[in-house]
Length: 401
View (spheres, rainbow, N blue to C red):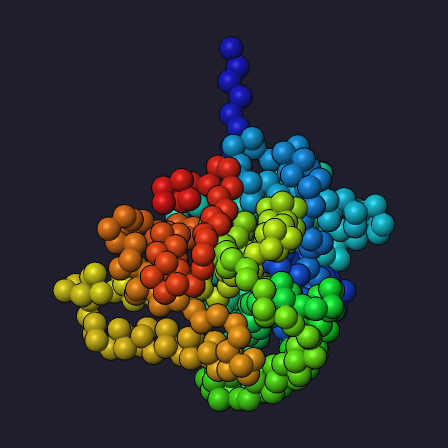
């Protein structure tokens, strides 16, 4: 009997060259429309054409189930279906060749028990199902400040990385402003109107951001500049026009849970934040910046655990501690421009210690110990009356914690 041998070959995209930048649009997604619009500005500032995927819809779940494995978790299925729907729409309007040659999709990866590290595998199944294996998907390392894709068409440099970081910061601040004010607005719909104006204002600021230096000089410019503070002061003037009635007792509900599901705003979590507001609650949304703060501090915690075996321990600890401090200082400087209405980032060491009796912090993946730490932190500091934890089906880290 003849035996057939099948060799597994990992997906490898065609190179994306510098010459293709002018006519190639970078697709990306996974965050709120605020974060994504500001990231478009940061990418366009560096000479790229960028477009966020459309907001998640219920149909994306069905499309995702059609193309990827049945064991995938909820966020994987939704995001894979969202990419598939986008590519099908582009193919319908512009043709198959346009999908292959005029668009690339960029996503990030990580490691651990979360399927986030295997999202790209599901995206590859989508390409197989759509017969679009020539479409290019590039996976970036979340923790590298500087990297590039094959061909040099996309270069993650210091100026671009810091532009994306400030996009994340300001997207978080706008989200906090939105949920802190909308429940108390007198004129219904005014908060959403001002929010959209603010997003476009900051998009233009990021798109026209000065590019000063390439590495150290660029870092120093972002540390000391008041460019973004002045932009947020313009935003504050817009929000000051909203009339509010604070004489309304409302329970404060803090959102926690799996990263994608808790930050998402749409059909992926049944629009639960809007639903809570309709039920007369004030929602405390989770900032994306907390997760990056967690990743930075985890490097510090791991270093402390390995102290006896690390050369130049105190120097390395000082460097990581400095960047952890700088990260929070920058976020607080931007909060100050909005009268400190947005919530501060929780102290990562305190989150770790609060969760320690219930969850070992070295069990990383997804939100890790933060799921427990955030809930106890909110109770200890009287931040909220209720915790609403959003756990998607099939989420391995959330199942552990």
